[in-house]
Every structure is written in structure tokens, then in C-alpha cells.
Amino acid sequence: MERKIVHVVGTGTIGEPLIGLLCDYKEQLGIGEITFNKNSALQSDRSKVINLLKRGARLAVNEDRLESFKSLGMDPELETEEAINRASVVIDCTPSGVGHQNKEKYYQKFADQVKGFMAQGSEDGFGVKYARGVNDSVLKSGDNQFVQVVSCNTHNISCITNTIVLDGHGPDNLKEGRYVCVRRANDTSQAGSFIPAPEVGGHSDEMFGSHHAKDASDLFSTLGYNLNLFSSAMKVNSQYMHVLWFALKTKEPINLNEVKDRLIANNLVAMTTKNMTSTVYSFGRDHGHFGRILNQTVVVEQSLHVKNDHEVYGFCFTPQDGNSILSSISAAEHFLYPHSYEDKIQCLSELFFEEI
Image (tube, rainbow, N blue to C red; front, side, top):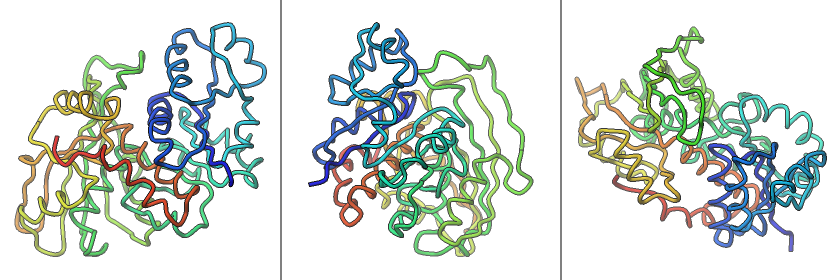
């Protein structure tokens, strides 16, 4: 029987928890082996690499850095190209722009050996855009070997819009979607790029504003939808999750109870009465998988409002790396088990929250 090997490139904000989750659910997901590539041998990263090795993952590094890793007590078993060549699926979690470089340098070279390649939200154009629960049909087509898992905020925008307005009603039901992404300055794992005060962003795209609405539009376009979306973004001096404000205008009338019912019916949506990112983040730390919330969005119930039977307003929190991790695993399982991946990933449903 063919050995199922998932290879993760990068050990940052998404890569590290993704490797850990794959190791912990290895048997349920039907994965034979998890390998990961680390670029630089750093003393500060030694503890996380050692822990991932203890959890069952195997380390791959560039051949010219083998001794550097060994000198720090990290023992690679594989070389970079060897690990890619023997993998069934490759999930790239490297910083912005590196995924494209890896595609050109490695992935296209081994496209005949590897079933599928994924990159994260920063790698626009890497492959077809994907978010679990929104456009799963792009995986089922079987034509897309390269997949870009969209960013965490694009997951949130798409999930909220799809759940409240589109699902069961079609694209014509959305007259317009407006969003403000209030982004945390950096992740708790990141030492740099924190800001001392709120910082507003610009609107780089004439039609969509910030890239978030553009990315969501591109995601929905894989379903043949042409949606009227516009987003703005800003950063605040916090490390506790992003916040999304949304305003959705519908063609069909809707009331507040219908909005809540649609959100509650989606198991990828978590509801909360908590109104601070810190308390939601703390819940995830106490009850999530190593602190992660895998739901696509966390909706603040008391913030929901319907005006004139056609305008829906509200706030929700973005479980930054969690929703991207879920989509990455979903896409990987599809490449491994195209006819049964939906059954395989049900093991992760115990990590979703109905209420936070």
C-alpha cells in the first residue's frame, strides 16, 4: 500500500501548530508520516524543533546546513529535495514570497511525484484559492494540483458572507458586502513588528479597497460568483486576534433570528457573548488544540443587528492561524483520499466550538 506522507515547509505561525496537529491526529487522518523542513538552525528555535521531533515528525534541512543543525542538537533525517520528492502532499507555510520561490525552485520539478502542493494566504497566484466550507468543489474537480489556502481574514469574510447571505440563496442575494478588518499588530510568537499605536491602512485596489475583499472575491469567483465587496484594514497595538466588522445588504428580506439561525447551523462558526479579543483568545488557550480555535469565525452575538429587513451588521473575531490550518488539512486529505476525505477530516470536528 502506498505510504501517505505529508511534508510541511516552514515552522512559523501556521507551520508549527500545523505539524503538531498532524502528528496528534496522524492515525485518524490516515497519514503514514509527517516530515517538515526548517530553513535556519537557530538556538531560539531548538525547543520547538525538538518537541516536534518528539511528537513523531521528521526533520529535513538543506544539505549545506546539516552540520549547523547537528551542532545545536537537532538531528535532520532528510535533505530538502529528498523530503519533497518522497512526499505525497506538500504544505508550504513559509513567509510571504518564499512559497512562489519554492514553487519555481522545487515544486514544479517534483510535480510528477507529488499529488498536491499548498501555500498560504500571502502567496497570491500560487494556485486556486480555497477555504474549507466555502468552495470545496474546487478540490473535487481534480484539476488543481496547486492550491492557495486564503488568509485568516479572507476565511472570516468569506464564511460570514456565505453563511448569512449566499448559502441556499445564491450570489444574487448579496447586493453589497462591506468590511473593516481590525488587525492585531503581530502574533504572540513573533518578536518584531509590534506597533505602539493604531495604524490605518490604505486602499490599494480601486474596486475592492484592501486585499481582503479582493481575495474573497477571487475565492468566490471559483464558484462563478461576481460579488460587490469592499474592505478597509487597520492595525492595532494588540496581539490577541483580528476583529472583523461587516455590513451585508441582501436582496431578500431577513430578520435577526434568521441571521442567528444560519450562523448557528454552520459548525464552522462559533458564537460568543464575549466582546473582547483577550477573553476569546484565553478560551482558545484553555480549551483549543494547543490554544488554537479552528472555527472559521467567532461571532459576537449581541453585536448582530438587522436594519430595514435587508441590512445585516455585526462584529466577529478571526481565529488567525486556526482557520488556515483547518483548510490546509482539508486540502491535504483531499489529495490523499479524494473519495473519502470528508469522512477522514471528521475527526477534527471535536476541535470545533459551538459557543465560546
